[in-house]
Image (cartoon, rainbow, N blue to C red; front, side):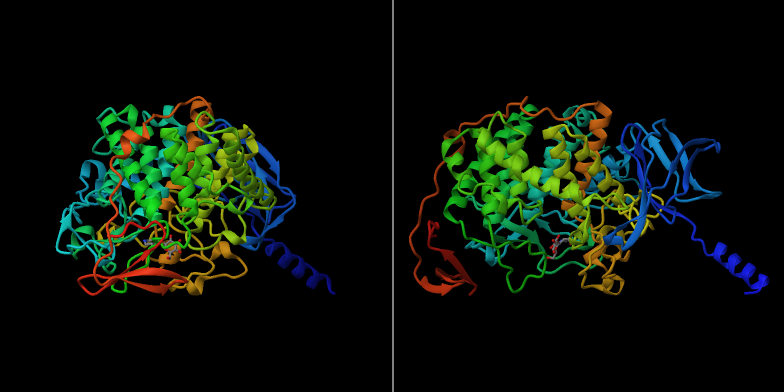
Length: 623
Ligand code: 9MR
């Protein structure tokens, strides 16, 4: 090789040295919390942290890079937790900044905590959003839901009747209201409050109720519980959902004027309803004992129906196309409902119910709208005053089994307890829910490693990901701009409603995001386009665990303390006093016949409009 050629080659080599890139939380780090960024192409080099004046405050040598499979990328995890002084900083490798500004503040997560909770106000059905609270996202009243009809699938006889199903939150990018999804969402937010009362008692969300004496977070949650209560039928069964027959177009609520129906009545909805109203009966007692009592009674009444209709699963009627939230097993909902109702009554029958399905290894599953064993575990493990040691131990086993699995996943260049298996529909809620498990493991053990792993997951959602994107609308440097969200599409404001966590990467998305699927890097399988409901929709059950995670971290660091297990005694109700009358069992109707369906003998009843209803024979109330 000539000297000249060698010089050219080395010049090319120098110019192809890749600039280091940092993937990081784009919103902010709490001063006392761990701080990590994932840096690509920097192994062995110094990462220099400078303040806004250009003064070096910390130098960290980037460790050896290692693979994070979901990104299919090698990265060095750079820990700069030593940087605790509030301020704005920049990370450098050589002369170049390698990422975004790094914000350190004592209340760094307060903004996202509030925004992710304020999202629920923006999702309110049956009300106008006033400018005072909604700013440029103010909108007219839509979907009043004061005259909701019964779909034949509810089993109601008079299909011309209507009922008042007002209030509640829209589920997601659509305007449906679904009890099952409301269940886990409302529970998650109630737990956020229960475990961090000091912090949330005074947190102002600027909602219409902000001036009353009740914490804003509880006022917001009550908006949804009041709707849930309207979904309870006279016999105690709970309607599955309240929606139009088909999804509305991408318009504002006021333009979604098609008739709305209560659709189906299901065992999963009913049991989720019991769990939420029982927990509400405890939490709201301090603020409004009448409302709390109403919730307790509703829970007890639904229990009768639940006992008598254990196999009444929802199946989507043929003329309906809205979300299904169907589920073939209601054992987890049974455990959860029994635990919550036992907790506020101490009733032995409920304890027997609870013991029907022990929280054994096979039931150690991450929570989601379909699988709620973990929700029972959170309640039981954090309340050794109400539950026996054996139940508490089983609940703790579930939590630590999951949490320790996540801790084992941490050993990667991004430092994240997230793996390839997490990237399905709503992956951001999958990881946020893992965060909720980890926070519980921390609360129960005081071991910081769990809280730190939860912090990593929060960082992931706010930008420590291979797309360098913040999945929370309105927050971060590279923001999601086109979520699948009717109010954001239907209005004239360019930016979407803020504080919404979009579903996130989905390696099996079967919509317009299909071409953006990266089989080798599931964490990149995302498309910021409103056509992609499978990666870019928003949903209440996704925002709730985000709010739980951000809110718990902020509250724990701000108050310097975590929930003290065993110090509270829940509100107590006498089950016999609240359960009311047992619904009477009515005889067969003329025309009923026995048929074989879904591997079992069922009672088939033809309703007046010709649709057929099927009843289980085991303990089913026959009408
Ligand atoms: O979150 C739900 C996800 O787990 C399911 O895979 C998906 C398809 O059934 O539905 C999601 O829920 C949607 C619901 O059915 C209707 N409202 C929007 C929800 C979020 O996409």
